[in-house]
View 1 (cartoon, helix red, strand yellow):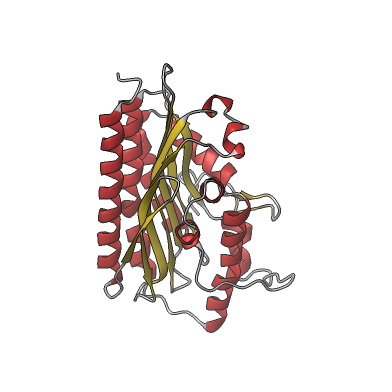
View 2 (cartoon, helix red, strand yellow):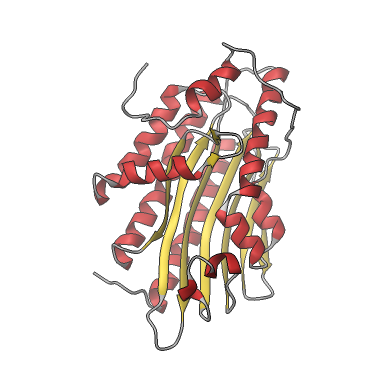
Length: 310
């Protein structure tokens, strides 16, 4: 087992991430049928850059973004060194693919995925490195079949790495994507992991690939089941209202957003995950017993999706 990555390993991670971006964009363009991702390559003055791909006003996607970034430099933000003092004085590299899909149809859930690698090096010392990532689903008009499928794919991706992996990272996802100020989940969860290095480099990288490769398998069947559903103007307004929770999470809690902004990342690429149209209605609550109320009452709670059948 290889414990510490070298330059060739870092290059292999970058190659995988760029290829993953290509494959996900191709699959989503094929699913959309009309929209295409427009690519913008960018440079970070302090070191590194990336390529952001955005689709807007497609047949399926109202807005979707798939971004790859590889940034590096010598100064870590205080938010990082406060929790990891061993990072101070090291040269760091951070790379990853992050995506968010906001469909036009409110019966099709929003989805998010991210896979990333971080390494910080200093002469005369072992590198500090880890992998992180996951994927999660945010429905507006939820369906248990979709939630179980999403979590089944997540569990299957984790299965070769141990029986405890899916339950552990599913619970971490539920904890992470919790809006404390609302006391509700952002969505129905999935997987979330960070600081992964205890398996050694090769096994940890293998797990990252398993998670990254599982996203399309998890999402597209849900899309195909729901994309033809008819919806009303009121249902579209509810989708836009619930998108407000997505914005709140990303701007208040999301680690990747905060890291990107604090390290001088490209703001347009960092915030490409935000939905195109969103609304906040003052003190609005759905009527009891409606599908809108059922979302928060039955779906936006931490549940064992693979152990419950209704």
